[in-house]
Image (cartoon, rainbow, N blue to C red):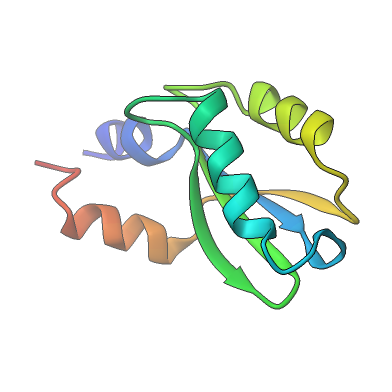
Length: 101
């Protein structure tokens, strides 16, 4: 089960973007740009938004983290960017959505 678990969840990363300087419609612009640049299932998805931070969830089985990061850095000017492991809340949500079936 642990190998299967890592296979499902171990390849997800979260990009945390400081979008405070991009204006009030930054989330919408970023979402539109991502869906255009990375269409289809498994595309990077918007996660939570907290304060100046916007999370982008990247499934590295579908698209390379470096490709998403490179695209975003060319398209937008962020004050700060962090790369994090997927949060436990996301893992639990995916389990309830049936990812381990």
